[in-house]
Amino acid sequence: MIDYHLHSNFSADSTSSIDDILSMAGNLSIIITDHYEAVDGEESFKFDVEVYKREMRKRNLPIGVEFGWDGKGKIDIDLKEFDFVILSNHKRYDEKDRQKVYEKYLLDLYTFVKKIDDFHVLGHLDFPRRFSDGFEPFSKKLYPIIEDVLRLVLEKGKTIEVNTAGIFRYGEPNPSIDILKLFKKLGGKYVTIGSDAHKVEHVGRGIEKVYEILEEVGIKYLMVYENGWKISSKNI
Ligand SMILES: [Zn+2]
Ligand SMILES: [Zn+2]
Image (tube, rainbow, N blue to C red; front, side, top):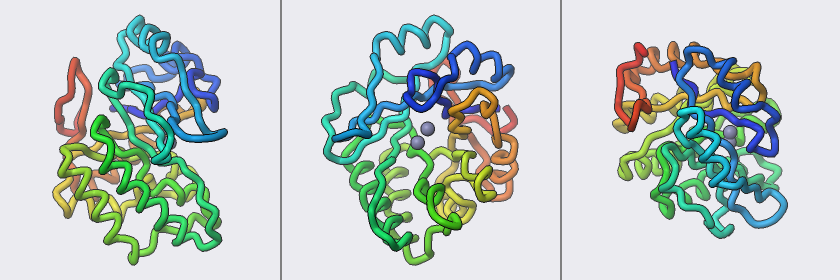
């Protein structure tokens, strides 16, 4: 099994050492994807790319990053240098209406995907649901925008990740099962899976559950990294 979304203490919001993550992971195939937020203001967060790469290489790990952007911050990092790039939108929106927040988030996401080519997967697609009162799902009215985002991702030859973190808040991954069904309907054939663990004890959390969900949705393949990317059937 794979866990391709993990945060070590290179991220400001995690204290896990790389070695502790590795021992917790056991047989899991992992990629550590620390935060690099090229955004204006306080939310900006950057690590020393050279030191980071050295630490990953020392342990024979692929070099991953979760790249956050706000559409304005200067992109001062060469994403091509990474083996795995998760593109994420972590922006917070002030709107009171949840669906309005979701709409703004999606419209930004569309713009970011349009502007950035150097990524492999789109991170936690319905991310703001995680922080919404009652974890309100994205309304069906927003599905045309979600469809545009997914089509663009697929046209660019990229894919999405299925992030298990939502399962432990409201029983569904990010994105939700309905959005995964839409992804499949649009021709999506494979995904990556990640726990988004910011704590060592969360490494690998919910991965098995996502295998079951993918089975149910009919997504048969994963994108896996074994000295380069390949598409593999899920029995790994
Ligand atoms: Zn994220
Ligand atoms: Zn993350």
